[in-house]
Length: 380
Image (cartoon, rainbow, N blue to C red):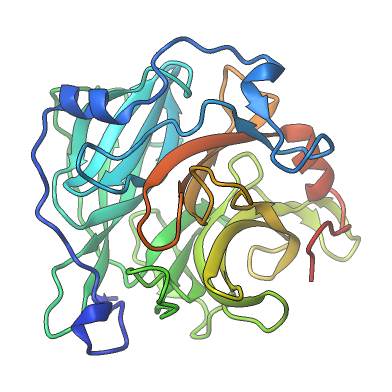
């Protein structure tokens, strides 16, 4: 599977622009990007319920956690992993993929390295293979536009633990592979294969955003996380759909960590289903909006919509007024009763700033959904 064009039109105005980065030290990036510097606690006052008192989802009151470096407009594509009581977060900025660490996953983040020091690298996704104790970091690499087209590949680097490979001042062993996909989520399925959920094609919405988001989600499988991956179906399994609001694109798709192991008897209709989150682009009157939907599956291939507005932009003026794009999840050891959701969002439609924040939801709430066939708000 080689590189694929992510655009279907030849006009240069639709191409993703890669701007030369401003080189900064890690200490400068820490100072400019980290917004929460003091110690925080996990009491209820530190969290808000954007959907009202009855909502299970809680937003961190001090959001956003990270803002763009000085002179830039975005920090995006968070992916997260807890290693040895520290939360490791990778985010995309103009110069590549930045690695930060925090003891509590909320405050006092410290930039420790540019894991991928290359403009156009973004949308990282991380997974840990428990048997080999290897951390794999997949990321999207977008090349400068040529003849109006932008070439996009997905690459892979890895590091074995414990080796301090992701600590400040050290390097990591690198393995590179390419896939015709982006915004992937790799998870082990019940017959011991790795499933790769990838997004492709592009949505030209495009009065309210310069960069076209993906349109479809597909599935590929491999015997190992390194590949080789083969498409299971030629047709996408998630994409556009009619309705109000109309779904015009399917963006990032990832299973929720802690709910990514299938234990379900389809014939008996009992057991524990898989749960996943998907960013969905919908058309509104004057613009398009992307929000995070909650889905469930009994096999990993066919997904039902549970809540179309599980994590949605705020109605009022805020840091997440317009769009919520990419995300990642974890169940932290310091708060095992909740799933943390790290996500990026924009504060407006045209001239905007993209930041990274965090929300949480009780594990028991998700358990009740995984173990039932009932649907909830917005299900279709």
